[in-house]
Amino acid sequence: MKRNVLVVAVVVCILALLSLAGWANWQNRKQLAAHQQALANQAVLVADNSATSASADSVLHMSSPLVGKPAPAFTLNTPQGDKLSLASFKGKAVQINFWATWCAPCKIETPWLVELEKQYKPQGFEILAVSVDDLDKDDPKLLAKDIAGVAKGAKELHIDYPVLIDGDSIAKPYGDVDVYPTSFFINRSGKIVAASFGLTSKDDLESNIKKALGEGM
Image 1: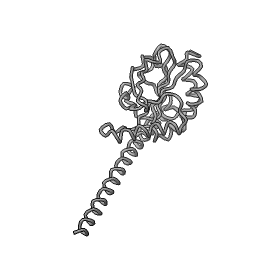
Image 2: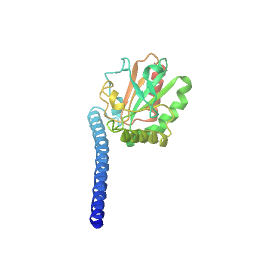
Image 3: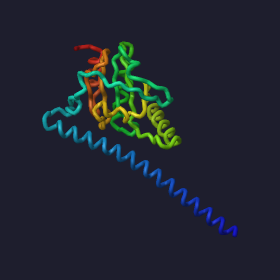
Image 4: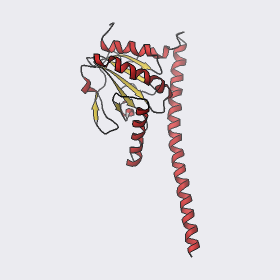
C-alpha cells in the first residue's frame, strides 16, 4: 500500500514538473515571437525607406501623422505602483521612449539617453521610458514577476528617469507602435515636434531633443 502511495506521489511530482516546464517554454516562445515580430517590422521599414533614400538611417526620419499635433494624454503606473501622467510634465520638453527589456537596439540606445537626459534636464527636459514588455494581468503572481522584470531591466541599463509599464495600452493613440525603440519628442506646449522609429544615432536623438526644447527652430 505504502509503495503504491509513493509511486503515485512520484508520478504527480513528475507531471507537475512537466506542466511547469511547459508553461515556462510557452512564456519564452511568446516573448521570442514578440521580439521577432518587432525586428521583422523594423526590417520592413528599413527596406521600404532604402528604396527612396541612399541614407543608411533613412528609417529614422519617417514622417508621423502625429508630428505637429498635441501629444495624446495618458496615465500609466511605475513598477513601484505610482501613477504618472504626461500632463504632470506640462511646460517641459518630453521624450516618450517606447522600449522593452528584450529589445537589443534599446540596449544600445539607452546609454545615450541616460547621458542626454542628464545633460538637458537642467533646461527642462524629461524622458519617460514606456515599457512594452508583456504583463500577465490575469495572474497576480505572474504580473508581479513581470513588473519586477521591467524594474530589473531598467536598473541594469542604469535608467534613472521615470519608467512606466503597460506601454501597449497607449500604443494605438501613438500610431500603433510596433517597432522598438520608438520615440516621440514633445515641446513645452505639449505638441509632438519629432519622432524616430528604430535605432537612431546619438546625434539624431540630441537634435530632436533640441527641437523639443525649442532650440534651432
